[in-house]
Picture 1 (spheres, rainbow, N blue to C red):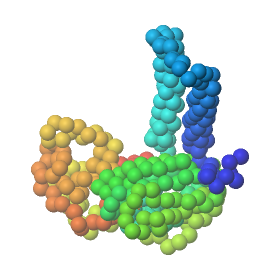
Picture 2: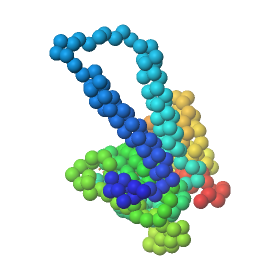
Picture 3: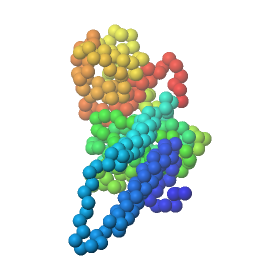
Picture 4: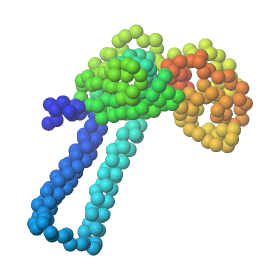
Length: 316
Ligand code: CUA
């Protein structure tokens, strides 16, 4: 019913109706209380108007029922908003277990997308309809922000770390993608499109276009080229930790702390190897800061991830 209203974007994801429902609730609540308050102001202004030039108002000393009412009712209403908002927030921040993972790198002033199969795109993102998609995002320079109004999703893209966003589109089409964080002179031109396709169409699209192999295979090559394999050997005889099966595991660091190996940790370990040394190893690895691009980092991360998944068939 709102599709013809220019104020309102199309709804094209599973999250859209949930966000809209909460939004309309807030809107209705605001309208109700605005009208109530404005109405009462007018009503009482008329009712208690000064009738004689020398009349004086009578003093009022509290009213327990009234005070409790205007305390408890707003409390209940704000709690409803809080719980409702939190449930939508959790749904947004927790992607389903099986997602199509796509890497996003923002830079002044374009969006770069990398599919695991190796396809690369600029300012255009192709996804299949009805499948959950997870974006793993970082920036090459300043803070940007991915915003797809039709999906009701938005998240900052921050240099030096990975942020996530997920969505499941509900109908094929082309949807606008904006940068929603001022990032320099051409910020307003940092726009793109999400192209949602039927699954069969998407498969055709994936198959087409010259691809240099999957991200993981590009990472494997890079791993050799940078001679990482001389220290990170699968047989535990190397000077660095074994990477096979490492991703997703919990490791103990030299200082006794533990952490789960995720994209951020692998990235940090490549750029600042000494930051978090696994216990039992020496801080002898050189930094690769400046030697690998953000895209190459993603390839290396995918390679490390693929080592984790080697024994089984990767679920897709
Ligand atoms: Cu990128 Cu604004």
